Amino acid sequence: MKRFGLSVKCFLMVLCLVMGVCGAKAQGGVEFPYPQIPSMMTEPQQRATYLLMHYWDNVDFNDMKLVANDDFMEQGFVNYLSVLPIVDALTAERSVEAMMKRAEVNGVAYKKLVNIAEKYLFEPNSPMVSDEMYIMFLNQVLKTSVLSKVEKSRFEYQHRVVMKNRVGSVATDFIYMDKDGKAGSLHQLKAEETLLVFYDPECDNCAEIIEKLRYDRRLNSKIMSGKLRVLAVYAGDNRALWEQHLAKMPTNWSVGRAVSKIQPLGLYVLRAMPAIYLLDKDKKVVKKEAVPENLFD
Image (tube, rainbow, N blue to C red; front, side, top):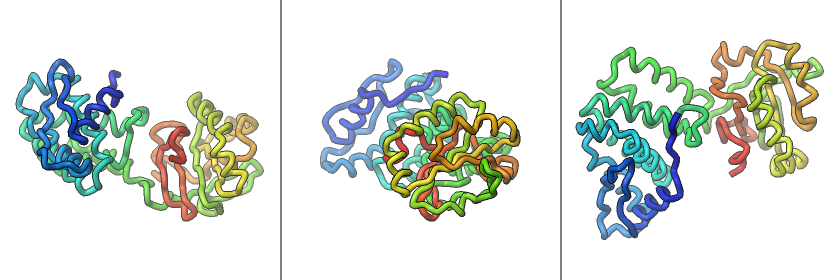
């Protein structure tokens, strides 16, 4: 599946708009009609806010030729996402609401934006996946009149998924059994930080990520200092399979198999493996579905 990213060129272009030193560039053979930020606005934060609130003002969502231009729509959307983290949460939410309201004039355009948002913000393998950003879009999708009740059912499910163990909430507790047959629970682990890793012994990607974590200097330093504990949990029910692979796990990790039915009970939604959560001392979620590269950023 073709997926756009925020290239260096596009990032610099968006940065230029915020800083006020350059103009628009062509995307998908069509120049994106960025709003003209008033010259009296000189502060980057002020310019970013204006850019977001008026980003889609000059896009004619009734222009079917424009809407059908995937390069134009997707790259424009990716560039838009790059500005969202710059502003405060309220401004970001208002901007998303304004964009989706404008797109409601054309059901085709609206559904296209929804699908692009899902592709970049919800699909687990997207480099831009973000539950917090996607929630802003889902909040608008669930109250629109453009989609039917049947069409909304998929997004209602996704909303439940992204709200589960959300950043800032207390991670759901569960019971696990360690390699010695001793029962424990997530909330019983005492540490300033806990790295919770759901994995599958037969998952190649899990093996690759676990190897990266095994030799991660920052992670090992935290483990050695006693500030962090790693709990790796197999959420499946094949005990023999789990036992066969125990020797491959890092020796300074706690490794267990879930006794609680993690997925059937909806305790956690594991969209991809491994699923990594960074928790604070109170077991509040600091990072959800994290990757080794940004664990401690």
